[in-house]
Image 1 (spheres, rainbow over the protein chains, first blue to last red):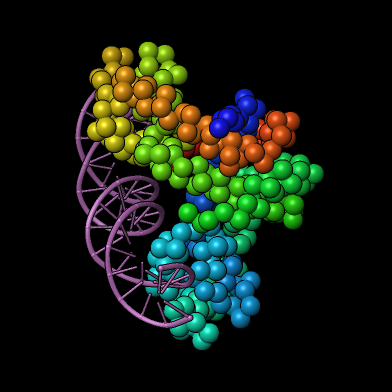
Image 2 (image 1 turned 180 degrees about the vertical axis):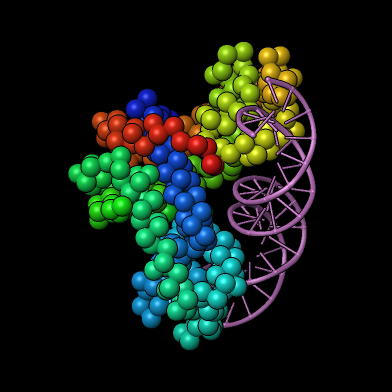
Length: 153
Length: 153
DNA sequence: TAAGATTGATGTTTCAATCTTT
DNA sequence: AAAGATTGAAACATCAATCTTA
């Protein structure tokens, strides 16, 4: 088997991808926390629930959309439930499963967090890109994100 | 103060950046672990040390290069030292500081890890991009990574 | 047996406080 | 007081095993 090796430009792009994501994410996350809100992972999970039909998803679906491993989703739900933002309900169609339902307090939190999150996205990410460049960036990353890989994380 | 809001394309690019990084990183990290190696964070730290003059850096320098918070660097060094890959030495020029020196075993680990890491980069990232696209991606992300921000993480 | 979900034990990251030297 | 570095306690993530239903 011939081993195929990334070229110099690919390695540099890989490093840039990691640096950019970590730098922007940690800056935005810090701003959101400084405003007294929970971590962005909570936002992402609640957002998926609010978008879902009937404001509910099963853990396995949440796992696929968040790219989280199963046990991580399980414990994230524990925390969201502890904060009274979601509720676990038995699943009608599948006895093994559960429906995770977002509660009004969860919807309210989403609404209050978005302006802060949005401002962070603009300040730490959007400010560095024109609209056209942002669109091009999303296009370039498309094939990577499309890879419907197993959610090891 | 007028609040400036990211446009639709920027928000989509932000989501794509996060998805792509997490997906590719977790896939590569899993491959590296499956081959019996420690996490990629160890690789990054050892690589910075090997590149440094005299094969040594102070924790504060490592912090800046890795975009890690100070206490995280401190504990990463604990683990590397526990694995006999680096050594802490008193710093001659500044009594508060230390020099973290990479040991031969650390250099050896870097050498053995790189082929596996490299193959992962190609399989989970490079395979989705042409060389030209990779170069363009790095260029787009440049202004974000250049932001010499505080290493909150 | 396999899929959905959880749990105990363990490792890592984070927060806030601490210690030392400048 | 400020900078470099570490530490205890708490939050979170990960691994391997477990439990339940399909």
